[in-house]
Amino acid sequence: MAASTHLQRVSFRSATPMSAPYYDPYDYAIDADPHPSWKQLRDEAPLYRNEKLDFYALSRFRDVMTASLDSELYSSAYGTVLEMMSDEPNESPMMIWLDQPQHDRLRKLVSRAFSPRRIGELEPRIRDLCRNYLEPFRGKEGFDYVQDFGAKLPVMVISSLLGIP
Image 1: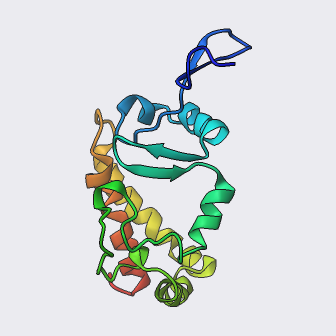
Image 2 (image 1 turned 90 degrees about the horizontal axis):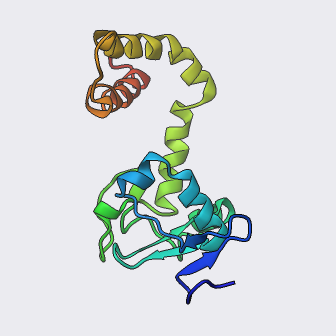
Image 3 (image 1 turned 180 degrees about the horizontal axis):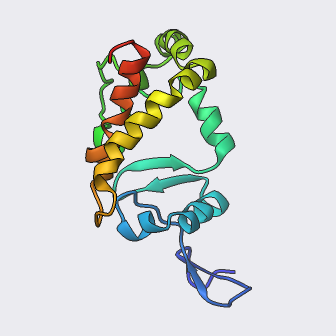
């Protein structure tokens, strides 16, 4: 039942108005606890349109999986995050912005280096890296996770995979 036009509904459980689905990846309140927003999108707007930021979002796993496998209709070449979306295909050689068959070709090559066995062999090195990056912050109030850890670890793990100390 509509409480007003299409903007609000009445929940029969609580008899309180529920707002229309809304998702803004830059909204700090949503970011602090995104699960209710994501659930509402899955339940009410599986193909969601944010007019303000000019994007569409799929919220159901099956839909996302289907889209990710259909590079004819859905392309990563135009960007994979809002800040980097463009009207023209990206000319970057980065694998994440490539579509089939180029993406598949590179993924096949890279996947050999990231096999469970190979990653297992690197586990002691990865633990050492984590310990070395995090130890200076023990007992501190906090730290910048991305700058002090998240941006460093992947580079060092990939270097280790390539045999670079």
